Length: 296
Image (cartoon, rainbow, N blue to C red; front, side, top):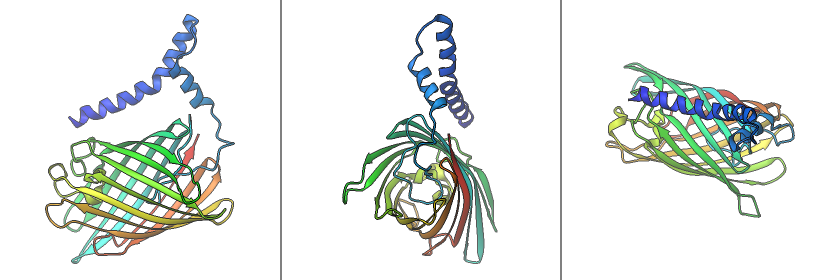
C-alpha cells in the first residue's frame, strides 16, 4: 500500500510539473493562446528574485518566518541535524537528513510546501532507520504589522502515510501553526508561534513504539528574538516547548533553548548553523545542525 502511495505521489508531482510544458507545445502547434498552466510555468521560469528581499528559510529555528516566498518563486531548503540524550545509563543519538523542503509561491501571500526527511536512531538496545511520513502544507500570510498587531502567517499542515514502518502513523495527520512577529527596530525582531498537530505530524521524536496504533495530540509554543549583526550575518536565540496529550503512558513536555546564525552569500542563498540543549528531563540533552536554502 505504501509503495502504491509513493508511486501515486511521485507520478502526481511529475504530471503537475510536465503539464505546462506539454500544453505550451500543443498550443504553439495549433496556434492557440497559452493556457493558464503555461502562463504560470513561464512565470516560474522568468521571475527574477534579484529585486526581492533577502531569502528567509523556515528550516533551522523552530519558529518559522512570517514571510511567504512570493508568487512564481521556487525555494529549496535542506540540512542535517544531530540529537543525543542519556537516561538510565543508556545513550541514544539520532541523525536526520536531508530535511528537504520545497516551497512554491502560488500568490504573493500563499505558498505550497512539501517536506521529506530520513531518520537514523542508534541506542544501546536497538537501531531504527527510515523515512518519516511525507508532510505537505499551505502557508498564508495573514496580517502585516500595524502598531501592536503583528505580522503573521498561518500554516495548514498535513501528512501522507509514506514513511518507513518505524516512523509512520499509517494515517493522514493534520495540524496548524500560527506564526507572529514584531519588528522592534531596524535590526531586531521579536517573534513566536503557537500550534497543534494530531500525532505530532509523525515527528519521529514523539512517536510511540507502535506509531500506527496509538493516537495523541501535540501542542507547541515558541518565543524567539533575532538580530542583524552585519549585512550578511543574522543570529537568533529561541525557547520552545512541545507538549503531548493522550499517550497511553506518561505524556511528554520537552522544553529547549537554542541559538543559530545565518550567513547570506546573496539575497537568494543562505547557509545556517544552530546548537541547542534541553531544559528539562523530557528533552534531548543536546542537538545541533547545519543547512541552508536557495531561491530561484
